[in-house]
Amino acid sequence: MQKQELSTPSLILELSRFDANLALMARRASAAGKLLRPHAKTHKCSSIAVRQLAAGNCAGIAAATMTEALGLAKAGIESILVTSPVIGSDKINTLLRCQSLCRECIVVLDNYDNAIELQAKAAENNIVLPVLLDLDPEMGRSGVAFQQAGTLAKAIAALPQLSLLGIQCYAGHLQHLANAKLRRSESLRLLGEAAAIFRALRAEHAQLRIFSGSGTGTAAFDLQIEELSELQVGSYCLLDSEYAALETRQQLGFNDFSAAISLMSSVVSNNQSGHVTVDAGLKALYYTPDSPPLVVQNAKILPGWRYDWFGDEHGKLYYDGKKPTLGSRIELSLPHCDPSINLHEYIYVTQEGQVVDKWHIDLKNR
Ligand SMILES: Cc1ncc(COP(=O)(O)O)c(C=O)c1O
Image 1 (cartoon, rainbow, N blue to C red):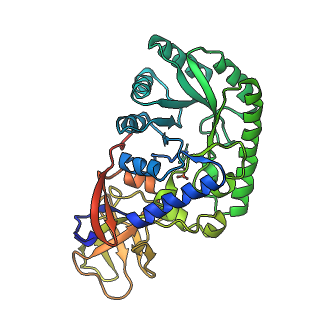
Image 2 (image 1 turned 180 degrees about the vertical axis):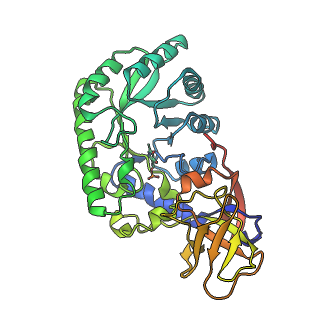
Image 3 (image 1 turned 45 degrees about the horizontal axis):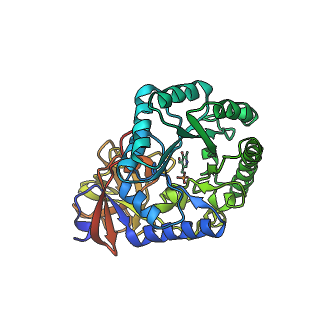
């Protein structure tokens, strides 16, 4: 089947571009002596995670939620890092279940009360839980302040059922900064501070081996941080249009990555002059007025065409030239891949426009 024959709206992944993105990031990390820990929050698809591991040079896979982590463990992923604190007994029980299914399910933590809860649950189950101390890169989302890291690390290291393996520091607020100079200097400053903390902690706790952080927007710079052991890059594999459109793309060092994901939609009404209506609204893609989807054809932007939101099921499409007929297929970029993919059941895999496979988005929803 050709991709234009798919029922719409459907997510499409172009395999050659996707595989090239995986190979490129693996090569860059390897050349810098680093490992990757690709983040599954981007795609919520264990088939993609397995392919990322097969591309090589990976420490394992990262997960943002326990739903993702459990799905990854069931899919046979051996090393999982949960990059958000796991709070409350239902989620901690799932964490323990993951731990029993794979070689290691590492979790981050930023709070002593949480450490005590994890310690108690691990003791009840007679296991030792691997943990990373989450450092706050002055963002305020999660993590302990740099100044308090030493004290909390010491307290965690004293808990017998927790095994402190290192730190996480993820500067999410920098990833899409349009000013590439600032993105670089801030990322090197913040990860540099985290690296100094890592060195100090390692002097006291010799078992520390992991410093996990970075994302697609800062990876090119962060490779210089000597202590950083693994990069939690997510979007690089699909490269949504928010990343692809950053005017400073070249300086980001990911100029060679290409958009591998798109959404196929259809024209469902064309009674108006100036615009047609397509079957892709809020239920098919994540949209903000700042970053509307672009109309693309095989990852190339069609100039003069513009998408605007038109409701839950619909989009308004301003066309250039001849009005598209009813049923015409319109391919849209994804402005932000993570929340858009989460709305779908499958990603259709294509090679030169031919549908060759479909992958279940099995880690979605939570
Ligand atoms: C903790 C964490 N690590 C890594 C990533 C991956 O970032 P990116 O998609 O920019 O590569 C994210 C994305 O939000 C994240 O929240």
